[in-house]
Amino acid sequence: TAGDGGKAMAGYRGVATVGYGGTATTGFRGESTAGVRGTAIAGDGGTARAGNHGTAMVGFGGKASTGEKGQISIWYWDFYEMRYRMKVGYIGEEGLEPNTLYTLDDNHRFVKV
Image 1 (cartoon, rainbow, N blue to C red):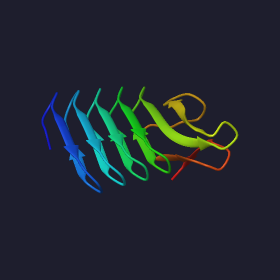
Image 2: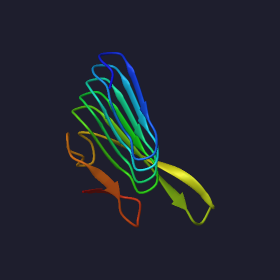
Image 3: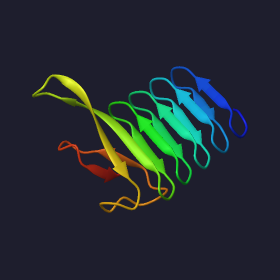
């Protein structure tokens, strides 16, 4: 846990929490939470949550959520090209709602958890 503008890191299945403008990073199946304008990053199967104007990024099979005007990014495997790709969504566009967890379906579309 770290305060505003801080950095918090945790490993496998860990939990990292930061305040305003901070960066929270966790490993595989971790839980990352950042405040307004913060960045939350979690590994494969993890959960990342950020506040308004924040960024939440997760690995394959993860879940992401941000507040208003935030951005979510989820990695997926492209079997045709045989490489990872990232699906990016902007809260308030294409039906994405703030403070709602999303993952990807089999067609790489955002779906509510």
